Length: 483
Ligand code: ADP
Ligand code: MG
Ligand code: ZN
Image (tube, rainbow, N blue to C red; front, side, top):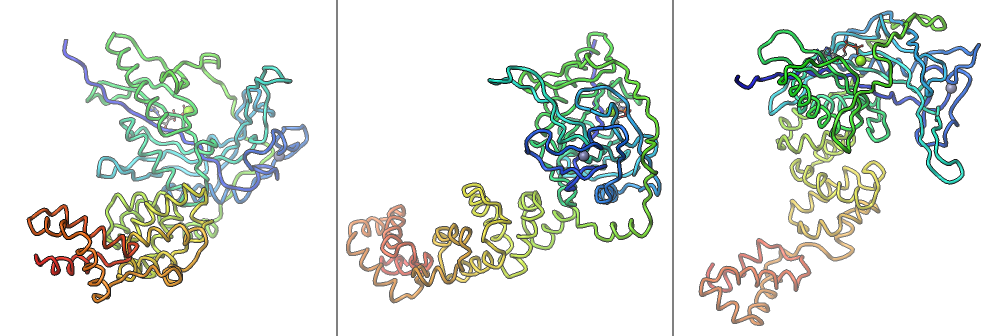
């Protein structure tokens, strides 16, 4: 028997928390990290007689995301109750959109091995999040499970893809591009560690060439790109093994164990759920009027894919740079403004990717909160480009510019760090060095190029790095007589 080849099919359901200040159906705060159960009220606790009311801002964000993903927004959609019992769900049901979702039939272009691939979006709908179970194990309380309902009722959108993804790498590319889109739209903080972007991955395999899809399994709650990829790799292999041995994959819901790197069945939850969906009687249908829809569309920002292409095209920077710079909308805007103010684009890109990001890391201060501005960076870049200051010294003063917002020009003047290009002054230093290291100069004459570097270094040392290296080189060659 020859080895059977299989093709994987993957569809992702991504939950993104919308960046509103208050919850989806009440006025409780959505702030993360506060003491447990401090953001609750009768509505999100599900007290009898309390009534939900839709957060208009959340709806606006959901529409913004849906339109950026090219979805058709339904003029009228509806909320339903999804009934199930779980301790983190005080109402006994989750308010979600079911039959009539907010938006359908979109797509996203994702970068896949140098080309782009279109993944269709099946639907985008709104729903509320559940609370969080906290497993306790400390003095006083002993061990046990507690529930924190701060998250209950926080607004989410669920973005469901068509099964157009065919490998773990593509799944990761899809998730990371979708994340960037939401980040650039400003509708989600996209912080996977805080759980405001999570993913359920559906995967099946079928013999290569077969038109029909295999039976899928669904891996729940993947909260990092790496776990998504690892879980899919593991699960595809597991399914292949089953088929190779003549078995059948069974429809199942799985959990990924990142430590053991394996998927496990969640058999604890009932096999086939019957959520007994029915329209939410306490909420009217969601109406989206044309004028509002148009207004949201007109205010859509440039999406990351377009931005990357434009950066390469208009600024002539490498694709790699464009990729890094567009990871954060702020960073991209900073770069563009620096270039607009006359900073050389490639230099601006280098400085942002290395020096600025290093400072961000070392100081723990975000670029936005730092004192560095595009104007200051452009000023520094122009000083270097014009030869007024050496690259080395520019790097030395950069932390002060970043932390204190001091003008680079003023710093250079105050500290006397300006580059020395005056030939007369440099010739004096060169001659001094040659006198002190006459034997080394002799080696250079004998053809030992390494020694030339040593002499250059001595000049730099005497001038505290301020000598213009090009000029020194020229003068030194002449002086040694090998010009
Ligand atoms: P539900 O989870 O409510 O049953 P669907 O059946 O519509 O929803 O599918 C959920 C996700 O599973 C979608 O992203 C879809 O693309 C994907 N999917 C559906 N069938 C398959 C399959 N055979 N293999 C892989 N993914 C699939
Ligand atoms: Mg599902
Ligand atoms: Zn509340």
